Length: 207
Image: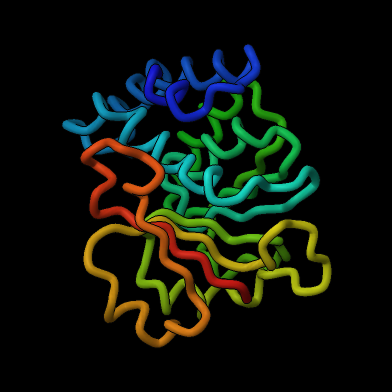
């Protein structure tokens, strides 16, 4: 939990309590439904919560924004972002029902009021959102193809134009080549100093 406070030192008491509650909740749920590698649950805050919050270092979502998390799994990046931005609405989508159940139960347990959930493939989701977020869920080109229908084009309220923000790792040059003129890539080791972030990137593309 200290690693969250290291980079986000202006949290309210409620936010601190919500973040602090995540470890026991995920540990318990993960023993029943595997949403995080069993070996990695010890690294929950660094590898999953803080990684998700990189999006909150890139953009300070305006109150009233509407964000869809595609392929949320057990709730990443959607749940940590919903704690960080209590006045932003998050819609978490995943094709695996038991993973959505974990994200939903944990959100309820910590009292999140700004999240909705849907068990479906993203192709089936017709809602419109200011931003799509995701965490290493599919190749970037596939994400763009499947989600551009969901971007709300007219109502722009944030400092960046509406679009896609995704967290990815590894060598992305080939994957991003078709989008070189439009997509921005940010190395997360410029934001977070831990070794885990050395190969991690945030990709943003307006749509």
